[in-house]
Image 1 (tube, rainbow, N blue to C red):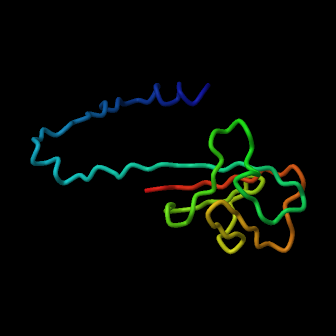
Image 2: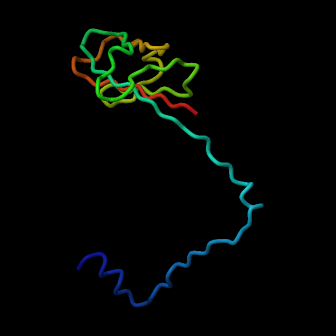
Image 3: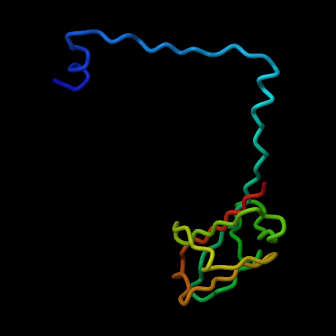
Length: 119
């Protein structure tokens, strides 16, 4: 007997839930702020197994504009190497450049993704 039949064959019935939507007017809407628009830009590169500095020119073709935006234009950076989020201590970003501060470099062919969130 499956779990669904077990619940349907209980010796008592449960009332159906009631969804109630409160009535309101425009004065009630002022209590809710509209979220600020968010733009997300991404930079994609592939490690050559040697570099510690990646520039706009190292970005992958076919993914649109591959620009590393300057810190003054970006609210939050997230760096993923081989799909793993890196701590801020492992990298530094400047306009057009990404610097890796780790002791070793990513293996050749490892994907590098810099996500830039702009509020």
